[in-house]
Length: 155
Image 1 (tube, rainbow, N blue to C red):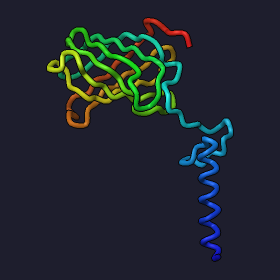
Image 2 (image 1 turned 90 degrees about the horizontal axis):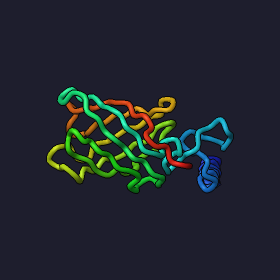
Image 3 (image 1 turned 180 degrees about the vertical axis):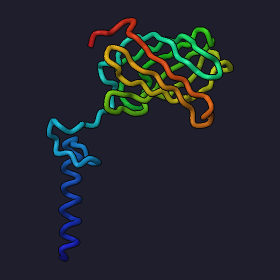
Image 4 (image 1 turned 135 degrees about the vertical axis):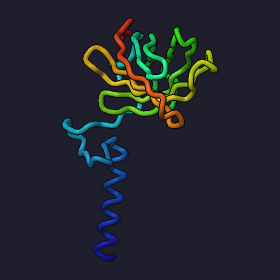
């Protein structure tokens, strides 16, 4: 066995061992507390009912409500309502990042009033969360806002 083959074999064994221990592979984490661990569920700080206002250049300012429940990546974890736009829908957890979550919005009420399948980024801002809505096929439409807790659920 050449040194290169031995190196590759050791690297593969180490990779699989680290992966089975849930250590971060991309950042070469050794599992120590100073490294971020990978999460696949809604962090508890986001769970609850939130209310706020967002601003979109085409439509001005509008109120909205978001309810977030516990759940795993790829599952429906919440709902969104835009009362003045007369639409709303479900939120599926796409990704979890440091102090933020990414949700795919599926409009199922007022489907002709709002753009379907937007991506929502929620980020912790103290006791509030910032809201950023985008859509890959509607780059001219972007909304930003801030949400305050209406009801914080028990964690």
